Image (cartoon, rainbow, N blue to C red; front, top):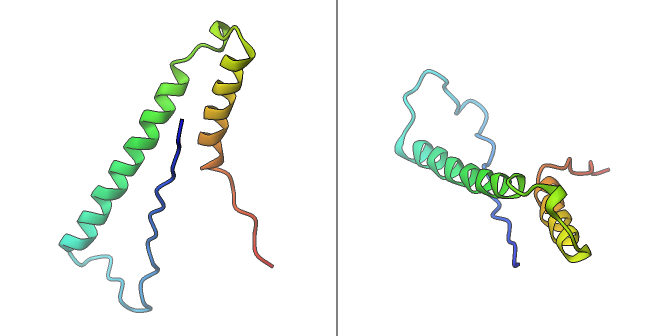
Length: 84
């Protein structure tokens, strides 16, 4: 199964440009919608793997595929090493 990761990069705002009381513009609301869709994709992957009962896995192939899929999901949440 081919797996890809969609990286969504959100730059830091320029100093002084953030106004928490200003109404959100179309671009910000659009970004929030895209992030929500990305979260739903991760949720679908998570629900799919959680629906598998590990007790039903009989062969090494079955267990290997399960572990591969589960660790791929977990690695997306792993802490990144700090740069020196």
